Length: 530
Image (cartoon, rainbow, N blue to C red):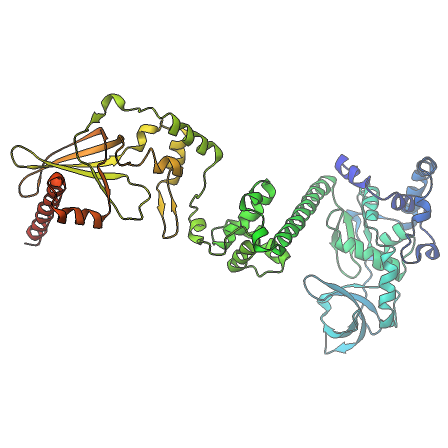
């Protein structure tokens, strides 16, 4: 089984020292236990490239024969009990055990604890009772090991724990699909099966997630090289995870920097949305804060909060977004919970400005001019958009005719245009106690699409003729042009009625129409009840 091109490229990342060390020889132990801070491979790595290459080429085939003959490696399908050495736990042995789901520690066995458990002293000097299931490796050749020597043992192990050895060993062992015990692996890469080398081999193999897989765990574990295709996929995942971890680290640094700035110096909200990777993460936090996230956003937000040292809660996400300046201190979360759009793109704003300069009437040929009507727009004092108004007159036969005028924004819009699609997406204007978010850009909504006093305004007018009892005699709907006479509040309209001005006869007719219409409705309710 030959390594794939991707795996070969990965193995080419082995340090030159590791390659030379693995190919040339098992080093003598004295050479391996180099002083702290100095690699055991340093002297070999310092050799000039051409000399090393020529030596490696010559010794490559010799080394394969020598190693195979010495170890007597078996194929994966040829595993036998002879390869598995059952090690019993007893007092004085050095072993590795799972402290919890994230930590493994070295410890020395002190004494039995009941029928199955054992009391051990770990590398931190802590005495605890462990179950046999927690033991992950019994280090060979460590009878009567002194727990005070664990720190020295770990320090020496650091000089031998070169992960690139795994890549090199996998390339060799995968060619013949050979399996190895931990001690055999130690003999191949370190030239010794002694306690230090065996532990280092176990450490590398047990934590490897790419090149080897455990196929037997009775006593001394046996490891098999993974197939090339599987290694390729695992390498791809590993590289992707490393890239994601790096992105997360950079984003957390960005959050911490923004959090440390004074309130007036926080980065603006749009600065978090310029780069796609940053935008995804900040929007994940936002969705998490308002309980409107999908599974991927929940995972991403949880990782960010954990890295920041926060609890994985929506309130923690909200607090973080406020601390970095992304949210204002008094934020209305419902805007985000219901995905209310509060801004417009530059393209939409540009099209709106063009319409304000040049806004042809698409319905001009069917629009009726109503210049002689007195038009009253009545609304609350706080209204930003005035989009409806009323008119009334008395017909020669004494009946009342009422007009309801509604501003006509559709005359500005081509179907499926940018503004039309934007309005369809928003669906409505949003009116809150603290703010208004119109369906169209504000300048367009408040000007051309609203009714303006004393200005010709495009509208849709519904005219209704009432019978004397308030019922509807006839009605019509037509596009029109009106010129609002007054923009009144309800209080202002009431005062104008009390003044009883002759020129405001139409306003009194409106009041009369409202009165007889209300009386007719009450009569209909009474008829229904009867």
